[in-house]
Amino acid sequence: MSESISQYSPRSRMRAIKAFLGQFLRHGGARLGLLCLVFFLAVAAVPNILVGPLQTAINATGDFLVPPSGEHLLGTDEVGRDVLNLVVHGSRISLVIALLATVISLVVGTTVGITAGYYGGRVDVWLMRLTDFFFVMPSFVLALVITPVVLEVMGRGGDILGFRPSLFVIIVVIGMTSWAFVARIVRSQTLSLKERTFIDRARVVGSGNLSIMVRHILPNLVPQIAANGALVVAGAIYVETSLSFLGLGDPLQPSWGTLLSLAQRAGAASAGAWWYLGAPGVCVLTVSLSFVLIGNALDHTFNPRRRVIP
Image (cartoon, rainbow, N blue to C red; front, side, top):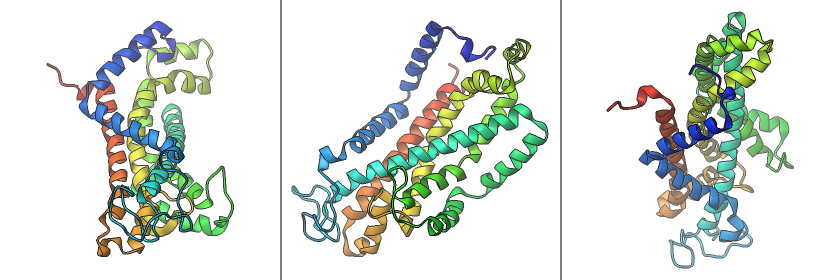
């Protein structure tokens, strides 16, 4: 890539976007992943229209642990709530947590990576040592240690930006502990880009360091950030599910992980209530797999080394 993406004309950008979409959609995995993802996003967008308000123990409509039937397509839970209702409402919580945590992770990782790669020297050394710590330490372990401590300090009452404190803490903790991989990818690309001719031209015309990083380097990093961001979302879903399964979620705003935790506590496995465990479990696996397929397709599209030469 010999010049900055920001220097392309609108017509050239449009042609590049069309060429990218054509190549991206030729991947079977991309089509399957997008189809599943669009379905779950549509479900999460209008849960009240699809299944009505979130059911509680007070307004439950069924008997205890009833298998799937015409009245309850995914059966009921231990207090008679419709599992389909819980899963549909849980999709919004799980997807919002994963997407917001990914945004935080990408912002932090991109900022650290560009700064370290562009400035180099001691800045690079210190930022990479910090990155190495988060890279070596599994994000789930850090989140598992940090989340209950922060919740103890903040308390579980009230809400923050529309989220219960437990969910807000999970979003921030996942985002702040899963950025190391993105930072390393961004740094390696920045080290290459800052030596290109268009960066030298930007310096000659008087552009400052911040302007060069934001206007010239960052647009060229978007493909790598997008490809790795899809994989970060899949990881965030697993971490959120695991934390909620361990009891750090909020029953008043149940995610798929919270539903798995409630099913485990109710003894769904020993009672043979496979639908109670299976429904949220299949949703977690399907959405995570969708993001992985999309991420792999993006990487295959953007990375010429992965293309098969006929």
